[in-house]
Image: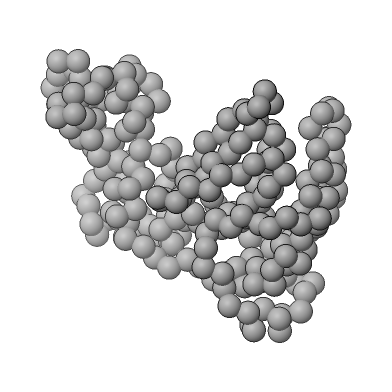
Amino acid sequence: MMKDHTLIYLYSGEITIYEDDKATIVYPGECLFVRRDNRINVMKKPKDGKQFKSVFMTFTRSFLREFHKSIDKKQILQINKPGESVVKLPDSPDIASLFQSLAPYFDTHYQPSGELIKLKQQEGIYSLLNIDPNFHAILFDFADPWKIDILDFLEANYMYDLSMEDIANFTGRSLATFKRDFKKISDLTPYKWIMQKRLQAAHDKIKHEKKKVSDVYLEVGFKDLSHFSKAYKDNFGYSPTK
């Protein structure tokens, strides 16, 4: 789950970003922009005898709000918001220069200062705006996301390791509003609802899809096999192997 707008630059290896049915492959020297409040699957791998090496540069709302104070607001109102959530950037000397200047820090124990990191982030924003002025509208859109259906979101994401704060954020709510809205649709707490969903999904996969217990517990979001087995037995009255 991408909480913040992010630049992904690849130094070596290969990375594939999956968004729903769309796959975007990134090769060395290429850079992606990924929009915040967006769920993606990421596959990283070495290639051509070289290890996987990349950097993710994120831009928090607080950083963007501070940056926003220094730019001309009139430009933003005249530009339409881009529609795509994952955008492969065109070749740009700005982007190449930015990330090549960061590479030496990964080969030493030297820790760059907070001020230097902030300057690099500002350089990243200016690089995006130089590539396409339409990034103004998406980077500096501080409106709260629209509320989306809680159960639809949980049905699609119950297997992921998300906190209640994460779920509230990704459904467009404050934590307090999320808890209040959830009470309207279930007598269970959100945590118990997710546990029930995971256990029922595991039961179906074992019984109907004939999957192995050792595979299923990870698929439905459990991290520990013994914890899964105990929860399963407590819920169904028998162990998953039976």
